[in-house]
Length: 176
Image (cartoon, helix red, strand yellow):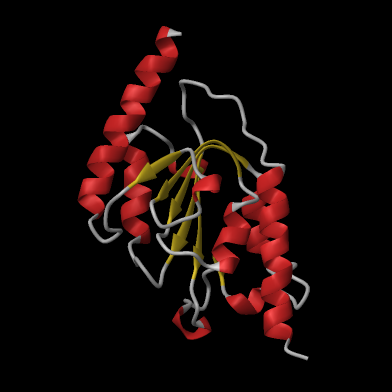
């Protein structure tokens, strides 16, 4: 039996189930916590994303980044906030405590910094509880509230636009 197919099928079913029962947290004008899911195979700028939250006035302790990569060999030895396809069992459950820790938190902003469909990334992203989900156009649009149509490697443009739209959003929620 091909367990890889069965694993992907189980994950696909879980994604669909999670999207049907997606819980949207109430919006607030103050964003204090940020969760970022980064695909290292598409963009290897973890430090840039940490700097992004500083421009919003969010403390580094309130930032949680988890990274995905296809290749286990790219992982630093002591880094814990990474996951690979091997961290998922044949029935689609994850065997990595970093994923569970990431998903236990509630975030004011969740940024899915990836722009292609991937069962493992989508599975984690579909379980995130956040008030505002941000993603890119090639990601599953049912998971996000706000989409950016740009190249992932153009981080300076993303940072500029992201900060601009968050400030507009803050002003509009304060006026309500």
